[in-house]
Length: 157
Ligand code: ATP
Ligand code: MG
Image (tube, rainbow, N blue to C red; front, side):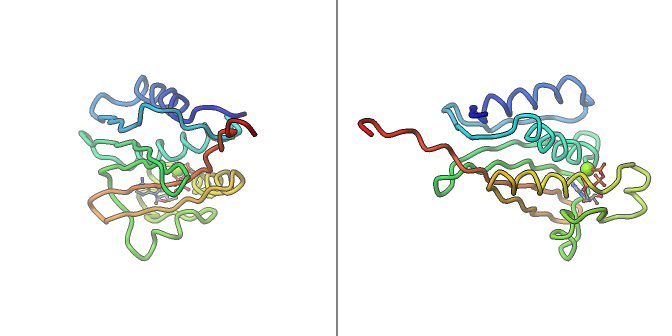
């Protein structure tokens, strides 16, 4: 469906806000305007759920999770930043692989299968977007992804 990503994103964050521990702060840096994208709503909800669940899962008590959306070369750029454990430099690109878990011991304790981000990448790529991560061990992680913006029909055409 074609819809405004900003209100969609707000809706997903609202759901997390109701369930997440009060020790984690969610901070939104989302623009006012409309960001029309053509997406499968259920799949995109799964994408955001996976990314935000990871941010929550790997965040310390009192951590902040920051959401941002902007325009970049005619595309939408969205990001989710946490102040969690971070990912070692040489492992950042592997986290989108199937069954990959950066910290085996901790991941086992926290649960999960290591499929979350692999599925997330498949969905983003099926929407003609791309996804990557930036991370500093001990400082936190940012997951970024792009989606094509719908070109508004020009008047008179
Ligand atoms: P699942 O999502 O299937 O429940 P998972 O969270 O371990 O399990 P992914 O979501 O695919 O799997 O993430 C892969 C690995 O990347 C994680 O095990 C973790 O090591 C690392 N990772 C992902 N997101 C973060 C993050 N925000 N902070 C630190 N490490 C992360
Ligand atoms: Mg996960």
